[in-house]
Image 1 (cartoon, rainbow, N blue to C red):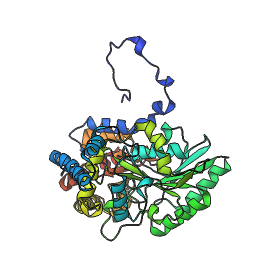
Image 2 (cartoon, rainbow, N blue to C red; image 1 turned 90 degrees about the vertical axis):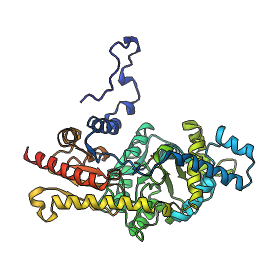
Image 3 (tube, rainbow, N blue to C red; image 1 turned 180 degrees about the vertical axis):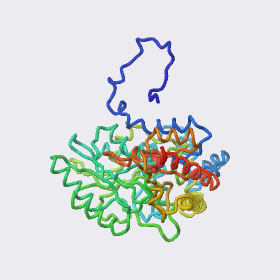
Image 4 (cartoon, helix red, strand yellow; image 1 turned 135 degrees about the vertical axis):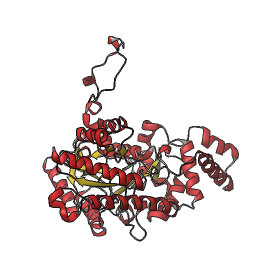
Length: 445
Ligand SMILES: Cc1ncc(COP(=O)(O)O)c(C=O)c1O
């Protein structure tokens, strides 16, 4: 496979730029893994795709975009905001940290029991920018190290790499990141003369593994953070979709010492095309002249230079959704949560029907059983790399993601990730039947 995008043959030689003159992060093949994965999957458009984590898009309706924006504008008018100011909010450059922080604060209070003032929130260009801003602010020296759950969402390793921040992976267990493993990793980093600064994790239905950190471990993680002087970067795009009665408190809602920065995304709770997320950073920063600002306010200097500000149109649309739903996204997403729960159950049932767990010794295939989220992982008896994925898509009509893409320091060579969020139940059943044929064929070869 050719990883380099093709260019016109007649491109003048003088415009050619040796790749190795670019920043190492641009050249690093790991940074390109997601593009390669989606390109490989796209080469086989008839293949059923378990390779992405795209949200279910069956209810999207273009007409709703203007409804959401109109709803937000009405909300401003109802609050007595002058017409000229509303026009300026939508059309002009706006405040760097955004203008819907108040609405997001109400949603966080309602849905997550996170009680922070609007000044502690920065509206960002998705989770991704929230991460870049947080990392840029917290990591001050080349010796500062980010600890991350491994396997991890590619966005965290990529953001750290783009900022030249070294990452130490901590391999999770069946219940996600183990607090004592975090403490050990922090000590190991310190023993090398470096400083562990922050810890990244997704406590609820992690991507890629679907794990959930139990309550006791959450409390212990907060204690470890305090003992080791770590900030926690809590990423939570999937927690909203927990089954009724199973929702866990976020680390941020349990954080009494100000050790957690919460990274939010509207990609799954509203729609990813808005490219909207937020950073909750309520820590107080004291300047030498005695000034006191929230960390979110202080970090607006970074956001200003990354993106100037977040899209006014997206803020108005998401603001409209929040207002329409009385700041209760949990209730607003119950039907969506049921869709994801059904897809998870169908995937698990189909796997168990084809590979009875009691006959593991024969088929050598096993998987984890998450209680929510968009993903699960399957262990197989052969190298589940991108070349295998290509054979799977080309010859068997089903694509998936190699787990090795998500491990920080290597691992997951015989594991694959199944993302079932955007496949209807019948497509899931057919996709698993195809996957079974592929796995059986690999086992024979
Ligand atoms: C763990 C995790 N964090 C964050 C996101 C969303 O990021 P963004 O808001 O940048 O789309 C995703 C989406 O795939 C994810 O899986």
